Image (cartoon, rainbow, N blue to C red; front, side, top):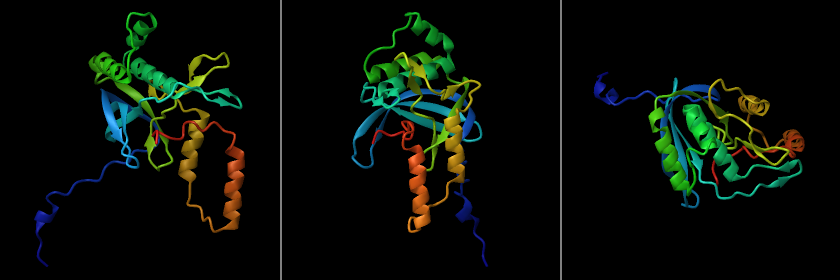
Length: 223
């Protein structure tokens, strides 16, 4: 047998696996970006949060331009709108990389208003000096089999005020009970044999238990 090492010259190590949990990371900035739907070819604007996650490397999370400010009425009351979730996401990013920015916004010293493009570009400018800041991020299993930062961090209080349901970026983060359940469920998930009547019954039973839950944080894409 003859050996020719030229075939191994361009060999590269496979990418590191990114698991669910709370990860230490380095903030690498914010950019205005675009994502194209593979199904409809529609283009969506996003706020692209760039990170370098310890033990993994470069990671980008896209937060989509909100298409509505409507707060849906559920059986337990109103839930946060897409705009609410985006506002809380931006607040958490700013607070994580430089708390003074949020203080100045709350005191009216900094105005963060305008179109989506204007707001993202302003956030980019405000956070540019903080590139290199150490943060923690939260990664949760998604329906597509991958993990990502939650895109639905907002909540509406009983008084109708906008509040924070979960911290997705910051310091000394902790998982909510709901997030821990999702991680556990993802670890224990096994393929379901739909041909089995027993399995079908189990699936329907599980649906009965969760049908009234608020599952607004199950997806990251608006399509």
